[in-house]
Image 1 (tube, rainbow over the protein chains, first blue to last red):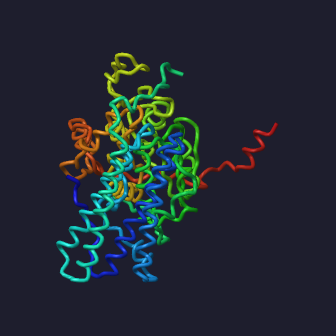
Image 2 (image 1 turned 180 degrees about the horizontal axis):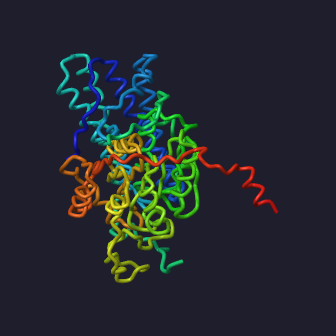
Image 3 (image 1 turned 90 degrees about the vertical axis):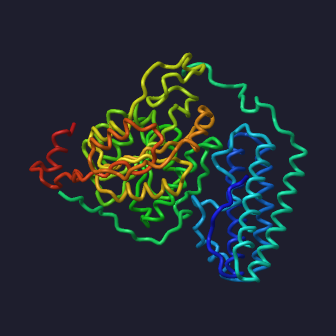
Length: 176
Length: 282
C-alpha cells in the first residue's frame, strides 16, 4: 500500500491544474537527475530509461500547460511548497537508487510514483466540494490509472533480477 | 547571560533552485548527500542568504564535494582542515555566513583535533558532518564512527574499536548548538540548518547520511530514525547524558547553548603589519 501524500489545498480548477503541472514538472527534474547519476556511473541502460521517463513526464506537463491556457500557471505551480518533505507524488525516491540497479528497479520506482499520483488525485475527487474540480480530478485519476497499467505492462518485459544484482565484480580488496 | 543574536541579515527572496550550481553531482545514486544538498539549498533560501556573502568550506571526501554544487562562495580545502580554513575566514570576515561541510573520516579522524578546538573557540559558524560511518571515496574503509564488527574485505572481522561519539565530544568541547538529523528527511534537516546558522557561536549538525554503495545496511536508517522525545536543553551535561543513553537515531535539535561567540579584538595590536613584513624580508 502506497502512502497517500498530503499536498497543497485545491480551491479551484486553476489550483488543480497548477498542482498537476507541478507534479509532472517535478517528475521531469527528478528523472533527469537520476539519468545524470546513471550516466556518471556508466549505467547506460538505466540512463536511457530515466531519460525516457523524463521525456514522457515532460509531455504530460506540456499537455497540462496547453489545457490550462493560464499565463500564471508556471508561477502558481512554482509557489506550491506544501508537499510532505518537499517531495511531490511523482518524484522518485532519491534514496532508493543504486549504481547497479536494473530496469526492473527503475520501473518499480516509476510504479510507486504513478500510484502516489493516482492516490493523490483520487483523494482530491473524494474530498473536494467543487463539482468542476471533482470532474477534472477524475480525469487525472483516469490518466494516472493508465500510467500505472502501462508500467505494469512494461514490467512484464523485465523480470525481477536475482539477489546478486548489487554484486560488483570489481570491489576493493586492499587498503590503498 | 542571555543568548546573543545572530548577525545574519536576510536580503533575498530566493528559491532553493537559485542556490544550485550548474555542476552535476557525481555522488553514487542513492547517496544521502543528494538530500543534504537539497537541505542546504532549502535552508539558504529560507534564510534569504546573499550568495556573495555566504561561504561553504569543506575538506576531502564524498561529502566535501558539496561546495561545487552550491551557488555561493566555496573552498574545497585540504583533508581534515576545513575547520581551520573556516576559522581564519570567519575571524577575518565576520560579515560572512560560514558553513563548513565534512564527513566522518575527514571531520573526526584527519580533522579530529580541529573539531575539538573549533568547538572550544565557539566562533560563529555552522559545521555539518555527513556521517555515513565509512570512507566512501576510497572504497569502504572503516571510519571513526564505524561499528566495531563492520566485517568486510578491507577490515576482516571488524576493527574491534569502539566508535567515536561526536555529539558528546562536541558538547564536552564547548559547541554552542548540537543537533542530529537524517538526510532522508530533507525538510526537517533544512529547518535544523536554518536554526543552526541563526544560532550564535559554533553550531554542530550531524546528518546521518547513508552510503548505499559501501554500507547498504544503512538504507534501514529510514525506518530507524525518530524524533528526540524531549525538547532541546541548554544544559550541556543533561544533553550529553541524553545522547549517551539514546539509540543513536534520535533526531532534532538536542542542545542550544548560551555561550557568547568568540570575536577577536581587531586593531588591538601595537605591532604594525608593515613592521612584521620588514622582519621577514629576505
